[in-house]
Length: 211
Image (cartoon, rainbow, N blue to C red; front, side, top):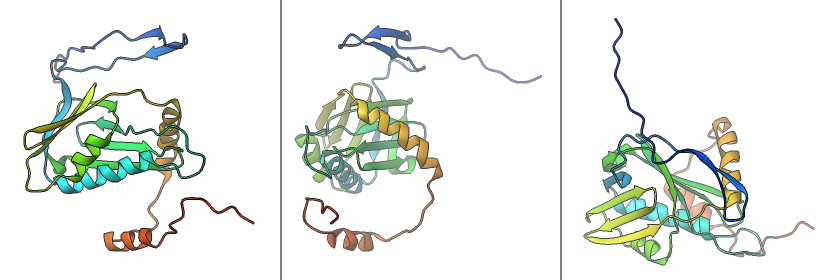
């Protein structure tokens, strides 16, 4: 006789097709969440706050940067995804020419992934400043929910609310998922070597056109 369990699927809303603000049909798919009472699908204490702060600050820099001219409106919103194994922060540069990602494995925090979910928030001036102030001796907690991301540092909270995801980012994530499984590491460098390479890059922001 094989063992079995009963599992009840619960959804926050019904999957449906609704009209977007521009009057176009929009597909809304609901995912199962066995713990809908939880406001966050991740909530935990960060073990190495300073390193996390530096990595997320660099990711925010990439998202704010355009690597070619002219420069349209600045987009500031990394995407945060939570599952049972890790927290993933990712985003594209303003020109969508550069993709950057920070993966925080389960060993990087003391906490609980209470479910799977994805949200995208602005990393504005307050959040960027808070990330730069993180120190390893501090008590730092991170919470990710469907509507917001909360960084708590010694009782002080910085909250970033969910924003709309740009359409070109959705297309970009589809392309990233298609080619990433085929990538293979070609070279690995130490932090010192990587820093030396970056510092030796040309300082000019204007790209040189081929003659």
